[in-house]
Amino acid sequence: ILNVEQSPQSLHVQEGDSTNFTCSFPSSNFYALHWYRWETAKSPEALFVMTLNGDEKKKGRISATLNTKEGYSYLYIKGSQPEDSATYLCALTYGQNFVFGPGTRLSVLP
Amino acid sequence: GAGVSQSPSNKVTEKGKDVELRCDPISGHTALYWYRQSLGQGLEFLIYFQGNSAPDKSGLPSDRFSAERTGGSVSTLTIQRTQQEDSAVYLCASSSLWAGEQYFGPGTRLTVT
Image (tube, rainbow over all chains, first blue to last red; front, side):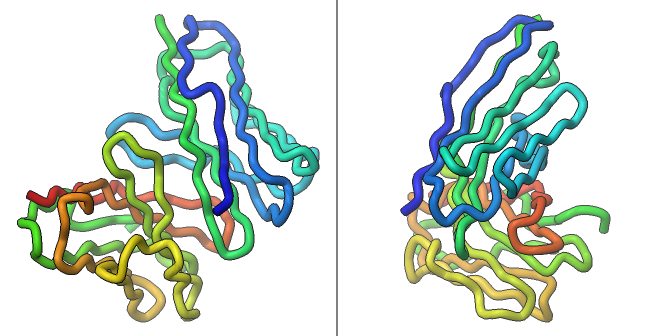
């Protein structure tokens, strides 16, 4: 069973701080890497899907990079806001499988 | 509708009863996925459907779980002889292609007493 890891498990930052977290995965059999934001009492919301080594995606203050050769992806949030508070999930597609990491829980303090 | 819908939103059932959970994907989406989140756990992939192909059942936790997708659209997840460990939020998602961006429904919270 493929293991997708995320770090840190949780993170508290002050409003205005920039932050980043990591998703790591086995580099073999890679197909696609997804990032989702999951706010409490809501459904997961897709942020990015990346497939190519070196991919960089950006949506507003949030961006992500992908390194398939070494098996990691970074998610960056610039100038964190309280509304960014959520659990950020990465998920790996490989073969016929789809595996989520345990998530990083971000709390942005006003 | 514009998004993925699931029903019921909440279901309380007695241990040993069968339950059916329904998912209506976004129209035109060929891929449909079922996940569950047990208390304190992450998202667990259960099963997916791609078009009219036979589903990949490898993620189903036991033979009490089954799923079908009629006409390539609506899907039903059935849990037979429910157990307390089946209590979880069951999420459905759909995408326009396999491994594409997934759109999640609001989930069904299942409680087995």
